[in-house]
Length: 164
Image 1 (cartoon, helix red, strand yellow):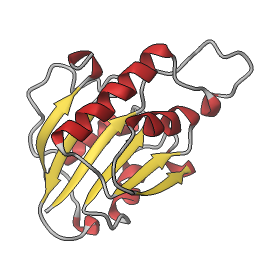
Image 2 (cartoon, helix red, strand yellow):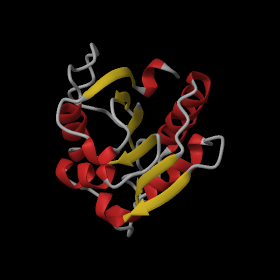
Image 3 (spheres, helix red, strand yellow):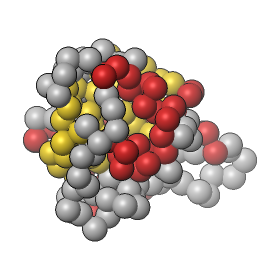
């Protein structure tokens, strides 16, 4: 079995004059949300051994604030910045961890989540996948390259508002 933790970055700061979209940091609410999501991941034992993260500042900062335990193999990918679901799936299929955290952006992230699950979780926010929303999904098989549409079994889906 393999496990995917699919997380959208936390809320970013739109009032950082002069910064490119790629360089925008988290805002205060985003920092609180990322901290809460990290505590939730640790408390539930959802600890990745590999992290595939967009190279954007807001995804990097979200990842840092998760304070993951262990020493996951972390890779920052420019290709995951505002990526479409197909590009994200390509990155996942190249992964080799047993439990992979993919940290990215909408709309690609929400589209990927919908494409991967066998049945959507019973949650009213799954369709819009708000900032810091996180899906935990299990897959049969030993290799990510085998991952196909609707092959994942949702284990959990949570948004920060439920934790703060």
